[in-house]
Length: 219
Image (cartoon, rainbow, N blue to C red; front, side, top):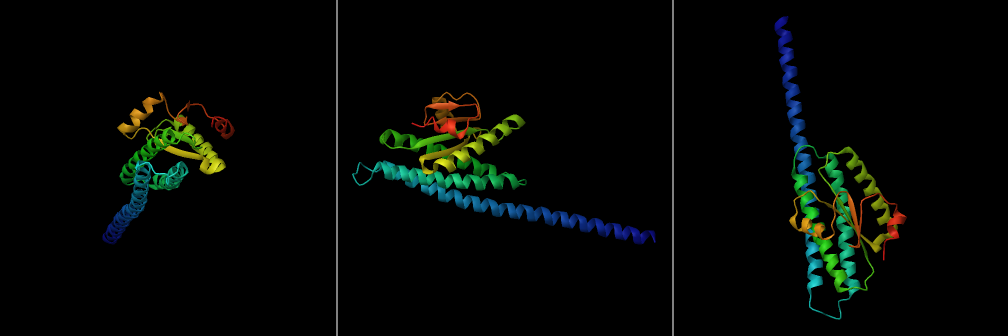
């Protein structure tokens, strides 16, 4: 009788360990699939960004208008903005590997390059009407108050983008990803704390604003 109970116990233990191991392996496999999907999106975005750079570097040509340069940057900004929302969903469900953290850093570098490209485009085409809203935040913060504030900022800026559409290029960038070019760019605008919002490279905002207040800052 006692031997039979021990046998049942070891069987149950074996099955528990087996199911746990299978669940863990399946979790890793599903996350890798998500990583592969995000990697695919990233390479598409990377190609689009280089295409935008190439368009801006073409020799002066009457057939290339400032509106075309603007549209190329707006289209790319919209593309990576939509992908950023997908990446955020993956971040929330990713618990097993650090792969998505690396992909997030690559996206932040792309967004930094986009910001630089838009600044150059504005200098080249000074009469072009486009508003840049760069949202600088901390990706790895553990401060509850800061996390809450960043969530509110994110929702406000999403509403602003929906309201203004292609009149606004919204670029969210995490500042704690060790991107040297971003660090130097931020110093240019004397950003001292996070989260912060840089509007048209003229205004740096730290306190929460309404979409109407933000719109009033557009030139």
